[in-house]
Image 1 (cartoon, rainbow, N blue to C red):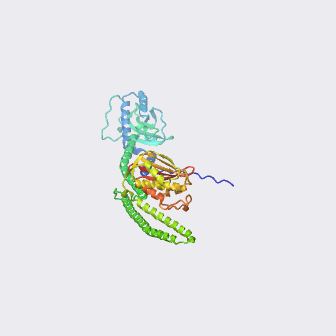
Image 2: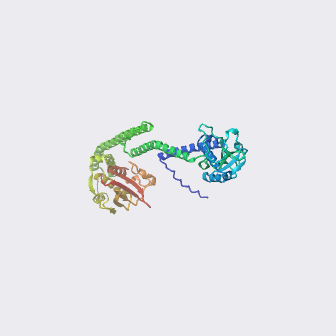
Image 3: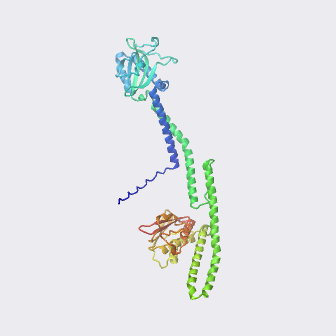
Length: 483
């Protein structure tokens, strides 16, 4: 028979706070918008770049055209080639001068794509050109003069970006010239398209969006976090917990509902506890009368009736003990109201409980010499119940006590059968008993550890249960040193 494949362990899911999730979706939204913007610009670049000439790129091209015209008009034509190379290195763009038929005259050799060639033809009437060959300053164009013809486009294989402007510059033979600039990138070294203002705008938009969104997101996530913490405390029985923050939205309505639920649960649980305590108290009298009556019957019984009467007496004692534990469970919650904290010497208290609950049992002790201030009867009863359970169900008992993070830590360890791991969270529930490990023939009521929990909580502490290896159980109580 083929062996079944082993089940693969599940990978833990990544837990992200709501605050992080909202910010993550906000970033995703910005990325989507950026991609859409990039796609739009890319489509526009493919269709044509003349629209860019109406902005700063057009002004920069006009300015470089004026500058080149000014410089070359004061130099002999033999030095134009060298001057254009200086501009190549300065701007990171290839400069070239072409005549109105598209023939390159000066500059690094540039192969003009067929799409760009028609743009090189200067169709201006001859009167619009102002040929300048002689050295000397060039008068500035009037402010209201129309801009010289310019172009900008994307063409060629591989793709390059082209810009050009018809200059007020002629050769000795009278041919007008066009300045052409070619670059492998749309930025053209900042001459065609300057990315820095756009990047600055994007960063500023992100910062402003973050400043606008972060308080809003923090307010929502912080309120939900507080709501979750309050709900957790309510789930652990603190029904007086209330959410005091006010919001005039759906979260505020949710907080109101949680407060109402906590109040109703508190009333319901208090009523149930009161009924339980009243019923247990009322049961004490009939049980006592039944025990007295049973004692009278035993005096008049025959030998044949003794076994039945003994069984009846055991059942009555079990009922009396159960009622006593129910009363103790009900009273444990009101211990802080009925008892004042006092200074307790820990070793003395532990020895008193051991003498009372396990006088004939050998117990290994590791107890520091400590003094704490807490509810004596609550700690006494809690420790006694845990020790009584250990004596009843297990062997090899150890008791350890010391300090941990400004708390008193008491551990009762045994080497008994333990309990199934899935029952650990329910061990401190009233009337719960893990039957697989500890059967009902021991006579327990299932209230012992529930009383322990209430007593330790009355002292302001917590109690937990852990399995030992290879077998056994550890009950750990953490109590503040001072209530």
